[in-house]
Length: 489
Image 1: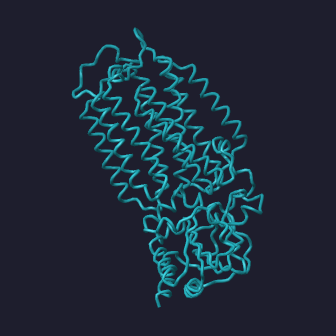
Image 2 (image 1 turned 45 degrees about the horizontal axis):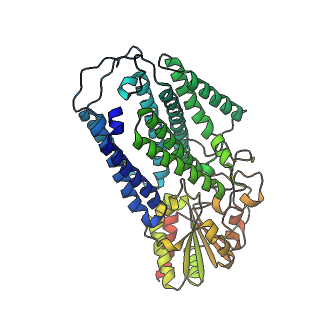
Image 3 (image 1 turned 90 degrees about the vertical axis):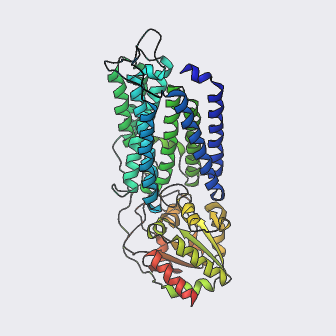
């Protein structure tokens, strides 16, 4: 291991890989350069993987050297052919999943990938604990793990386990297997703090001859991962996905220190820091406390977690013809897409509607909320897939002041991000979250399947019942198709 660490060609290869990862993050910061960023990321990962395989993996299995036996178990090195076979199996699974997954299920897929990264960190930690000689972390003349590697291994395993179990809960909430409402346990903050302190104590005490302490770290970390995520409501799930992304990066970085692998350290630190920064930005956009995100259960104290709509109040129903007539007569139209648009796969017909309106001389803009959808940037990805021009897409702080001069606000599949309760109702689970000022528009068209449903946060929306609102109750794609027909006539 040490010979590889000082090999200048290995250092140069890992440096190039790190530069590619930095360029990837820079490219992914904008929809216009995201494809280029993805290519940089893939190139960097290919360089890192190939370099590691060529410098650390034997072509054939050597006879088991002395010192590989540890904790009563005997290990051999994996050969290059075995590792390539494992990579091939993973590649087939990954390619198949990527080709079949719908854009509406992308948040669940991201959560599932985060869980796999966390689980991989745990498994690498287990392998290093039971076979430290294979990783070059064995004390000279003894079987105990080096002190530095022990601490790094404990942290990597703990963060990885938290990432795994937390991502499993996030997946279940995003996929509808669990309710999106917060699940509040009594004294949960005290329980989380006690579990965290216990993990820190175990990490400081365990060594190569204490497997019970090692597995205690793993078990407690799995538990605290569940406890951190279940109190968080569905409306805040995009921040959770970003936070778990950060955790997965720090787990990889910690295991990189354990394995003395520079590429893992750099890559993990980049993912961890960028995920943390994104979480912080999203917390500011949602008026949430970043510390409370890490502690778990943020936004859950505000009372009702929702569930049912309020008593039925008078509302007006509109038609595709009404929407087409008023929008083509308008000067400014702002479209606010949400997860319902993604479910209906209406992004392509929505772009066609915007193109038809522009032919009538209408100024069309798209308003994207930081937490629209189920993960950061979800709506941007969907609109980019439909070839919506980037200069027509605006973030909340850039467009919210324009609703007062807007003739028509066209809300399709969004709910919580246009709910004024976030400003007025202190008992609402979304209270404090910045929302679009759609109520200032002259006319509001609200595309929704039925009046019986509520948003992901589970609260009713006063916009439904405003005088200038017309409810367009139908499947989002079918409704926009009918509007397009009316616009084309």
